[in-house]
Length: 105
Image (cartoon, rainbow, N blue to C red):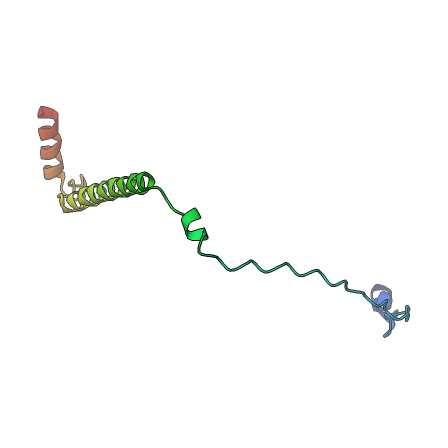
């Protein structure tokens, strides 16, 4: 019975491939080189000149964002310094007192 179940193992694969044709040579075509970019001349810095109004507008935007970030950081620090609300399960009396005080306001 073991011969019937494992009979397929008797047919082993050949050690060498059947196709013994030599591989085809691969030809690589040279790609044309891209021309190097010319060195910048003295006339180009004037072409990249940024108007003063644009610089001032960008500075104002940056300062506005910096102010907003400073405000957010200040709010975060203030929120961290506040006393956390009492938990009902940890301090039930304090929780009830705080709930009553909030309801009165």
